[in-house]
Structures are given as structure tokens and as C-alpha cells.
Length: 140
Image (cartoon, rainbow, N blue to C red; front, top):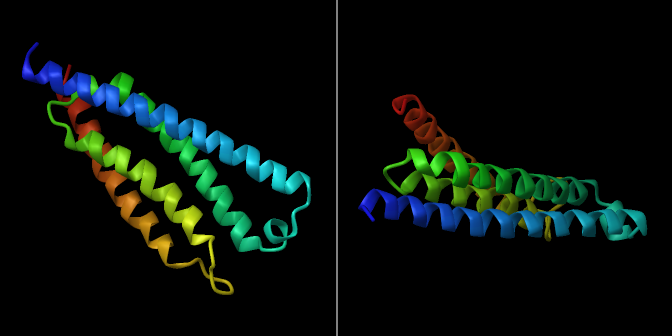
């Protein structure tokens, strides 16, 4: 197996593991949020910012897990380097964690400090996607 094939296989495995695991956790978070809503749990329903941040964490976990899975199938074969996959996987963790942790112990009206993970993760996502899109145009 050549070095490029080995890199591709490692990227595919890492992306499949993280993508499916994060998709499972994001789906479980959605079930928990629906349960909190369904049973009218006060601390969840009464704090609009907490509800918004946890919903954003759930939605981004599921959405970015799907991006990582698509990368495993369609993006990794295009890449000669591993760093774009690393950036996608890191962003898929940082963005939802930033939203979720930002909901914990937040001051009135503002998310707590971990919300700063969101723009860092978003930047990593954009750089990774740019590299993958560039590779897609290069390969014919």
C-alpha cells in the first residue's frame, strides 16, 4: 500500500469513527432536549438562552457529524494530506461543545466563556472546506 493510500485509509477510519459517534451523541442530545421540553422541566424551559444554546449544540453536532461522514466517503479520497480532515473533525467537536458549554452557568443574557470555541471551530471548518473544495477542482 502506498503512503497516499495509507493516509486515505487512516482519514476514512478516523472520520467514520468520529462521524458516527458524534451523530449518535447529537441524536441522544436531541432526545434529551425533547424529553426536557415534553416534561416541562423548568430550568430548561424558563431560560430562553439556555434552550437556544442547547438546541444549537444539538443541531450543529448532528449537522457537522454528517459533514464528517460525507468527507469520509467523498472528500478523503481527494486529499493527499491529512490536515483538512483534522480541521473538519476538530470543528465538528468545537462548535457544538462551544454552544453546549456556553449554556452552562451563563450570566444573564450572555453565553458563558466557552462560546468562544464556536468562532474558532467555524474558522477551522471554513479552512478545511476550502482545502477540500480546492482539491475537488484539482482532481478531474
